[in-house]
Length: 246
Image (cartoon, rainbow, N blue to C red):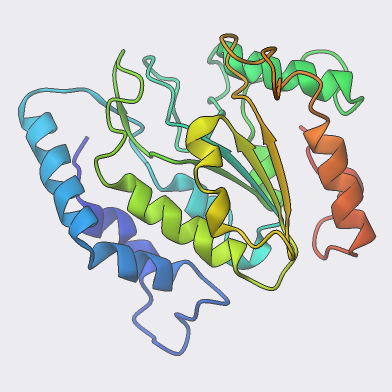
């Protein structure tokens, strides 16, 4: 893995300023981030850890933004940080590539989908890629992690970017649903205007917290509530009936 924030962010930075508007792409958010002290600190940290032979996942930390353009976002699912097992993280929160056994958190997501009647049986894979085409931004608060070391990159600078993303969406006029799973995700709630958007909170779907009070993930009904709320507001794009289909 070669950690270069400018290279990673480059595809989002339009050379045509007329096209790089906050309303149509991620460019403005990435531009602010790249010019911040947080980005500089993060770049130095990643370079140092790679020099020290750390194994960092995923290889494409910004993949969620490539697959879900800003103008197509209808739902934001926000977790903590990428999976830290070999071959698991693929740049989409909670998703794993076909052929990779679904981790426990993802298994609990499937369990909740079945409980809400939105999934029948076991899906063919642990990939949530179809959701990205339905306008679901699969985002973590921190976008990289080291092998076998959960939360190892928390507080190193990625939060400045994900704060900017959530703020841009959360202060926008298009009604969106924000699913904040776990304390790290819920810390971003002040960035979202509750008069414009639906904010759903629960524990992280990890087995350690999925059934714990006060907001257990199992039984949260987030997926059904999101569909109903968006349908009431005439959300554009893919049919609401297709939302969260795998």
